[in-house]
Length: 571
Image: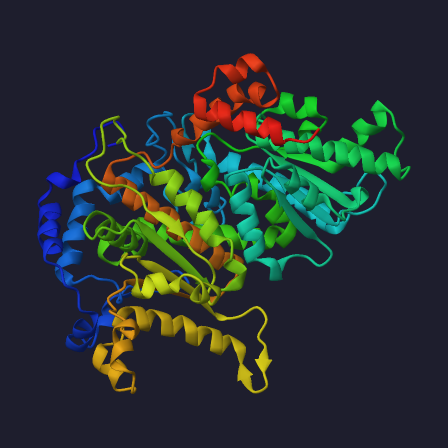
């Protein structure tokens, strides 16, 4: 399938049936629940530690049957098998897509007993398991040295702050996971994350730090990413300046080189460039071109996380991913949670006109999860051509967005409840908080979760005009207080926000993205749309620096904007 033309889903019988249903669709969740006492049980599924309730979605048995037929017709299960076997399903870059291999249990361990293959997983001549496990062991050994104090800065002081410098997947994944797992971070350690080329970012992230106890991780596969290398040079200058000002090192080339070797490591495969920067290549952790940036947090890109939560925590994190990978691989489509959630997204996007999708974690530690998902989903499925280069035949992708509850309730839920847009929403919560607190006799987490349960109920069932009137509301105000209901939601509940559960949540959405991309026939693993702006920025940079000829070559709008910038910029 990897080298064949994608199937046009719109030509299938299932697609045409769904179009017919959608044309006169009038969902009534109140009536459906009343007529189906077992609806919640029927549409609630278990995927590892995640309990996923799909019952408040706008779906019937008939609709679900046609959606599953779409998945069968598109070959979702077969394409997933091709992906995990190392077929080059990233056709525009002629690459395998093997992020699932990053979390395969080590061969020979009990967890590896059911692996396929159990050992000797060779792709393109490389023993994937051996390479992954070797890199993990190197990362873990380094993490242990930092955590124990065996790795010190140039003056012998132990590391207290790790600053990860990266952008895109080299930043969004690590910072999200670090924030999600803060209760698991070793006491006395802190991680900070620099991504933006805006100089304010590196300035603020180094503010208040002691250069003697700070370690920088420069995460760039090619060691050539503009933003990352610019920030790395700024960090190196900050280190040198701070160490020489305090007298910690001499102000000479040898001392500066020694300082970089003790305060910088890299996640990169470009060892020559790493060495040229001053980093010892022995302290460079590699990863592979079969790992896309947005799928890489469970690779060496997660070194900052491994330092923060420790190798055992990171192994649990990887096991969480693998549990969902196995669920995706072995569970029939009709009970396969990522497939079902992906199919529901197709239903909303292609048949009911939804353009965005809200992710609303009722867990403050997941506050960066929606931002992480923005890259995972939109960079993957924001495509207008199929994997064979032909135009897509459907709308693709959704705009993912969100904020933690209950903050969002006081910001944008108005639009979700009473606006004219259909916005499917995923609500995520955990039963056991990291910090159970009481307000008097009241359990604060229970109050928090009452909002989680109430919001999905309100969105599903709404409030009729008669119910509003029964409260004594003035007739002139009744229309404004009516809630139409039938606003679709998925509820995801986990026991606690552990490393394993965080891994499960990430893998869940990875495979949702995969399902949608397969239905649409697109390559979910390239990202050519990010390239043009970067190329133009390099071309425009001389004009921004005052090159008159370069400025003159720009279009009138760009020229005018740069001219105004140059006028406003203070020397």
